[in-house]
Amino acid sequence: DTPSDDPRITNLGPIANPFSLLASADVLVMATTTETFGRTVYEAMAAGTLAMATPIPAFTRVFTPQQISYFDPEHPDPIAFRKWLDSLAADPAHCVQMRRDNHRFVQDRFSVTTMAQRTEQLYQNLVSRPPAPRSFVPADLDGTTPEFFGAIMDQVLSTDPLTCQAQFNQL
Picture 1: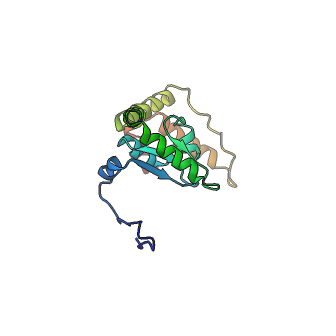
Picture 2 (picture 1 turned 120 degrees about the vertical axis):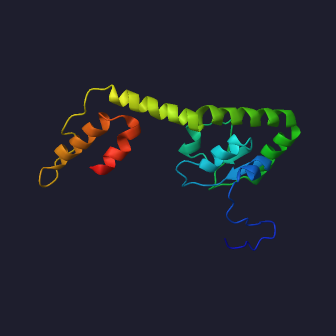
Picture 3 (picture 1 turned 180 degrees about the horizontal axis):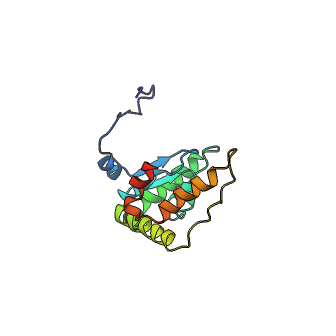
């Protein structure tokens, strides 16, 4: 929360609900090389904001270059960035369509309902499989790890997914 020495940068500090800010932005630029999920980009796109980001797996595995613009943070190219911004400004109708398409894309794949359905399907797939082998982890020094771990996995796989966490915590 330290202020910037650059007068063009304003630190807003913690924001309880950033979605109105994301929705009011024209573009979100995410210059991370260490982010594992990139939630900010997903949230911005859900809010209808166009995004430019580094080509990390969290983005390249999900978004096409038509949905998100990529740049190399090790070799930034301000001319390419400017051309991208100019291309957006030159075709407002295309920007509106991209915003709608990106919003729909994120909503269709990452809404709470969709994620809950996918998680439920994953659990259904897991519980419909044959039981896990009792010894798929190498034994620890006293030889108890495979049985203990197998027992935990048997418990997890044989339990209703909604109550699994509570029972797992009791072990």
